[in-house]
Image (tube, rainbow, N blue to C red; front, side, top):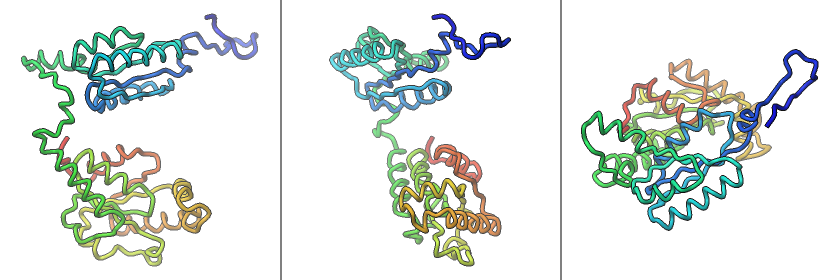
Length: 297
């Protein structure tokens, strides 16, 4: 394909897009394929694709591809995507069964075998053979972390939005902030991923007049961590829940954020602005700031 020239031809440096650059603007297809849950293939595949943020992807997770018939059906899906896109789909797989992998290899996709990429050099370093077991990393058999995860999630749900405060002595962390600033999803993420027992306590509109730290929180000051948020972002979030209300008005959001940030400063409560961070980033920053160890990794 010849270069396409944009702009006036007499300019000394016309803007050009080569065929390779045009390809980068076209949407690609990516499959995360596994004979288990697909969590490992999807997690690592997503992390790798995130490094190519100029290329849009259609992403599909296909777990439990664990029979030859399922593998052949998967080949048809891959080939259809290749025909539609005019380019090979990217395939991240954690298939253990070699027969199934050989069937998938007949497709018109670009395959990245996550296990062989990492296990082979690891086997050499450890001078031991991998068990190549399906679903090993997400099995609950003999995994004490599983119950820790469930207990932490139950704790986060039972101690959400300040509904119950008499179990704060068992909390690893207590997140505080205005309503809808990201406290609940952060607590649940830390519970699911790290087994952290996190409660959260919202400061409501009724708290704002002469805002003080409640006695129940003062007793656990060392566990407190604050979340704040830009007022315009908070307005948009609240508007989805209660449109055209005082609760979602910019004036109310700006007032609450200002009052709570003032409380954080007065009470020396560590805090971060959640506006531009993902829940993963917020959680990591909190654990580092508070020095809380993950119950499992």
